[in-house]
Image 1 (cartoon, rainbow, N blue to C red):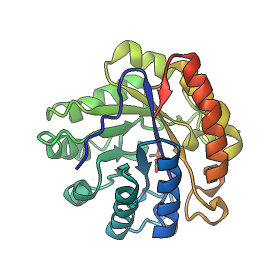
Image 2: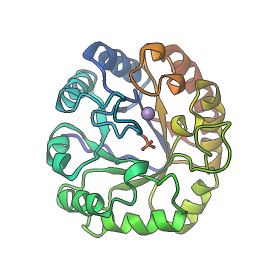
Image 3: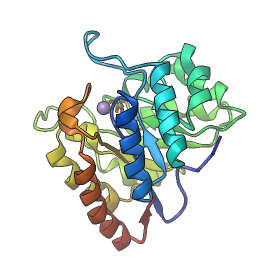
Image 4: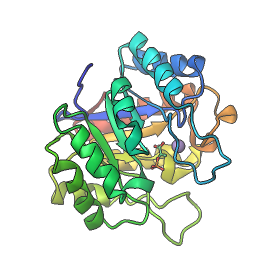
Length: 259
Ligand code: PEP
Ligand code: MN
């Protein structure tokens, strides 16, 4: 198992991949693209926390097998969301890093269980902000994870609920400098879920880099029109590749490289 750290000084870690793992052709195409672009991480959801029980819920363990095979082929590390205490060990056996989603930021029993399960192995955790949580509440919840002794935690701003409906969520870009001021933990910005639509992703990603993010999360899919979840916000491989050129220029302007 590789333990590529989420964050090294001077770098911005790109956490890209589809919203949901759907099949092996999809994951191999994404993994090959990431590898060719010099990136290290592949994300993908296998246990999906969907708003509606009638929406695609993810492939579960089969999805983890598909993602880990694609990642192995391309030498990438993997990240997936844990939604339930009963799947922590299973998920840890397949992936390099665990994600805790916005809907579970305040699921303290899940946080305690993940903190405990990673206390020894120090598996990296990506801890998303609750969509209705203040930064104080988010940082306080982070201590449920750090209490177990795993120092390898990265926070992730992913947009909050406000009265605005023009975007899916309101990206709180100020969370980036606030976290840098209040915490030593690195901060990722997920630009896809607040955007809700591909058209808005580039501007949010550029803003996140300029604001000082340590990592970026971007959802990408070989054929977004056919995606089983979050189709409108996922970039095609070509669009992502084009955007990455621009993002690398912005990163260089703030003295960082995207890996
Ligand atoms: C995700 O990244 O797949 C996801 C469901 O994100 P969030 O928890 O931010 O909605
Ligand atoms: Mn998604």
